[in-house]
Length: 385
Image (cartoon, rainbow, N blue to C red):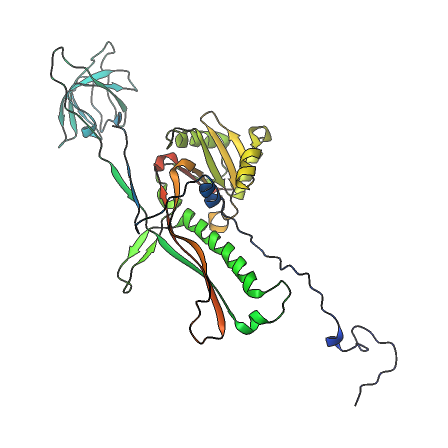
């Protein structure tokens, strides 16, 4: 029997029509939170800093200059000729050392590496001998040799091996064939999920590049599991932990530390900055920040330039530096980063099991990163605004 009503029909309420009769309207687009954000990978790959990984542990060699700076280890009076130092292997007989705090120069006449003691001639130059205090800086200015003498013994540094492991990352799309077959607002769901998970796959590689830790585990099963290390693990020397407000003076001084070394001699580096760090830098004065239109056009990312007495920073806001990484920033030497794919990113389709009434696809990459000369990089933490 039909339902009979007296009065005006309405879209809802007591006199509502059958709700299934109403048309449903959706915009065709599904709006997605968190679009892809991978500025480090974007810049690295667009700078052609990509090199295939031919093994599961690509390596490179690094070398350093023979150190010229040392420090006194303990205090000696002006008349004492035995000087204990932190690093006796840095020195050889005949070397002239400058005691920076007093101005005195001394000449090394013997080296005892077992006791870290240098036998020295005091007041080699015109400056009188004075007390050398613990941790006073000593600058090695090379040898002063006797006329007609033999050449001094050679000193050299040993290269250091650096490496990283390749990591296999797989990001999966899985849905029933029924869902793939029906009409949906936003278009075919399989295609939409592929796009969504492809963006997530790139974002995960960005997180690995920033925060990954290298490891090879050969005990968990029949085949090994490897993870790649990131820039967090790479940086050890230049770390500025602020735990609060960052002043411009601190920032400029830190830039000087990071610009002391560079891979290709350039005094221009990048700064991946959290929102808190970006706001802090902006508060110091907009006249010190310049929009870098050329870099923005090249990389498709908003780039701002900061000019310091020690070099130039191209600053990029990194939206993934949030929550636990809020207040972080990374100074990076772009010439010292390589993306190392062993197997480049591909979309593998139809990998579902035989007989399964579903589709399964995956974004697949096996890759790692190489980082050179960690003293050319820097990390800032704990900035509040």
